[in-house]
Length: 309
Image (cartoon, rainbow, N blue to C red; front, side, top):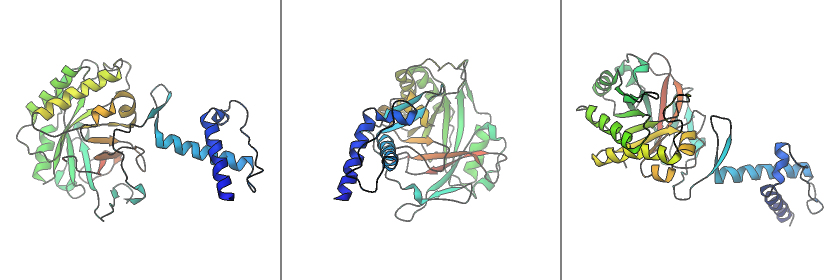
């Protein structure tokens, strides 16, 4: 009976919080209090802590909370139409830089690296000793003028990685503002792939450049989504696999996730463990990795699912 009373009290408190009493936790309104006569051993301070914990658990299970570039907080409802993952991130292991995830069957996640001309010359034979796959930037669109260019190190990186026996994929940094520009970017990628055999899907890298003069600044969610779909549809129509890459804020605030999740997702969040409810094929967990054969910091990734399935 005591446990039932505690549960009842917490439940009442949670409902009160959801109906407005949570104002106390933001410095507004009067402190929340309730009778503790039926909860021996529990005072209002105990109950407040438990209620806040329950409220935060409810919010975390129901919403993705993000802060936009203007400092505004958004609670975006988690879609019931997108599959959630069931990974237990206590199974993550790390030697300080390289992370591993141990699955229930005892297998260990593959480790990847993604690079561009910003990494300069790379010794791919050394890289091969540390990673299982590599993503190489093929090209990009400028965030102001919108011109498309080939990555200066694309050919050298592809040749080096393939020669070292590393399974590869390519990505394109997009700043498309329409479906048609998304198609243009996809056709640029298809026209510059060369004869390299890809082991991983072609990826659209979509990000907010965080610049006042960026050409994508005033796009709506639907316009951002259509620019992405132009790329995805065109690559898929060519018979090749395709995937999107971006970070937590961009996926949440700029895209219609139910449309984007028709294809595999590569998720970027630099954290000890990812805070994302849905499945993702690859997790980019740091931009400050250290890998033999690459001078300076580099992005590192874990493969959580097969992106080709």
